[in-house]
Length: 166
Ligand code: ZN
Image (cartoon, rainbow, N blue to C red; front, top):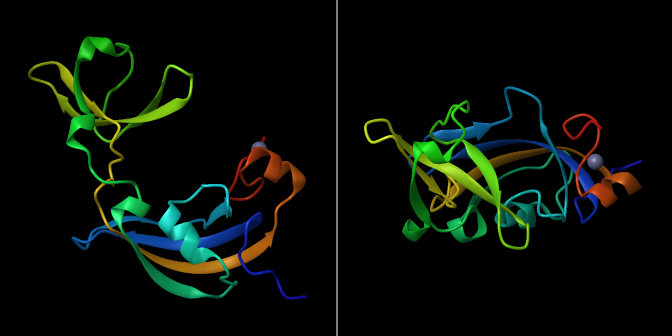
């Protein structure tokens, strides 16, 4: 039986390597466990998910995703400087760490720590993703494709190896 090609509501496992335009490797799964994701539910950046549509196990390809279809353009007005005292004293605040706050409707807003200023006891937070403004150069190898289960579709994510265990 041949496996299906990638379409909405399929569970895909793949290896990926993400290289930035300066040549640095931002992330890679090739040395470890593959990524498993549910296609068509916004679990990957849009520019990558679109290129995966119709691909099959064994397919290897490269895709260059512009910022607008990746983690967004960098918005300088999204940076905000707060006193260190605005954060819980028992939490280590480190550059690059992410957390969530909520808007007026209770929707989660992802925030990232851009800079910790030890001298002035200030923390710069931003809604810019650390990879905003960057072109994302992915090398992809598709490993497997299967139909999602009912529970996976209800939850919007993958269960089992590479996914959620609950
Ligand atoms: Zn679940």
